Image (cartoon, rainbow, N blue to C red; front, side):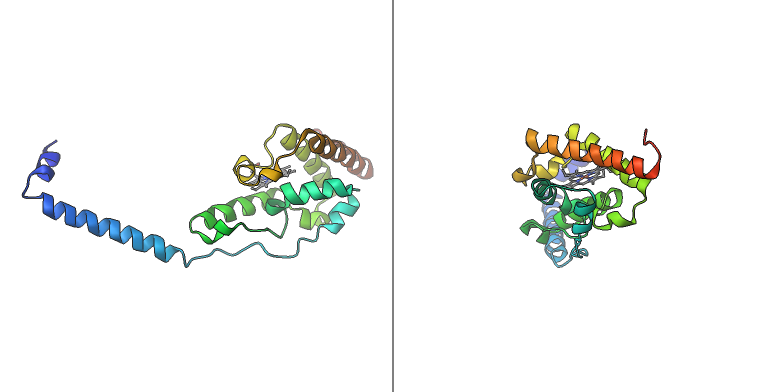
Length: 175
Ligand code: HEC
């Protein structure tokens, strides 16, 4: 309270306002300078053909996956305009990095049979529970929301592939 009294007193007020102005000005300069910063982008070859072929994905499902998943789960992201704004670009990069580290359709060939089966199981779970695509994504990409038909198609496709990989590997994925 004492501090407030001092700040309010006419003696200190002008000095306090001066400092406050400097801080606000400094912050504005920082935000402007930060706009020159741009984190590395995910603009490699998406190479989805191998994945689609191996998993017998119907064209309709390929379209859904490209619309709703590959921005975060492949080596190629279609960036929105606001990716030019810091810190939004940092936040987006975080999602892409994290999404890719869990599941990357561009490197499907590098996954073991066991991992492939498990990822198919995860896909079934994540989309059925409405966890994927991320809410923060569908909030802006309205067309990425799966309708019930698209959801069913994805789940039965994932189920079939899970069984196929288990059969090929002679194991069962129970996690
Ligand atoms: C905006 C980015 C984004 C989009 C779009 C997105 N994901 Fe994800 N996904 C993530 C992130 C981040 C994680 C890891 C953190 C988590 O599980 O929430 C993840 C995790 C997953 C996992 C879990 C993998 C594992 O083994 O743990 C699956 C499966 C998955 N996503 C499938 C999908 C599918 C299918 C779609 C499209 C229908 C999709 N995702 C769309 C960002 C995204």
